[in-house]
Length: 262
Image (cartoon, rainbow, N blue to C red; front, top):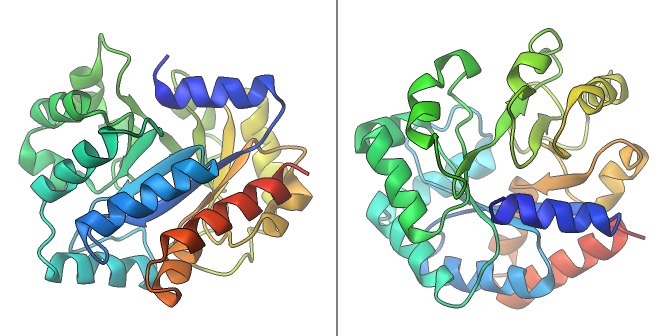
């Protein structure tokens, strides 16, 4: 198992829910990103998604689009993103996932990118614009090692494809809670309970829910199904409103985790 799988197994053994947060690398600076990630790790976050800035983040709403844009304007490059992970890994072992778009990975070189991620300590990849049917090159590059895994996404309209997508899934499955882009309010899909129950019935890995989640109360009605929550846009809004305060990041994680597991 890699770090993500170890953390999920430990939580399930304790019958606790997981919290995954997202932050765009380089917003407002690389060093500040490192500080915020370490603060969250200290507060008990289970997995951190590091958003790799991209010029056309098609799965993301205005908050993350703007964060990515400002990070790029600030000079963030892929090499800076790698350097961010290296700095985090000096004294922090929180599981890390790159949330990114395929163009960045493809341009770098799929095999080379996978090897780089393993070398610096990245644990997983989420590539929202890479359909399951197009993942062969990435799967081939990741074969024969356990350090880096690919996290699969499913949506409310994936019903017929879920068994195929999750057949060899690792880490956890990312269940998109609503159609459209990230950052909407917690107005989940009208058939959210049935959808999540169907995913849960076939999944061999923990079921995580993301898109539109702000607080633990948003997912409380579904706690009997899901294994945890993923927070992105709401966390970035909080960071922006508090001048990227590491203390506020800790407070948010501590409160969310406590309420999620009451």
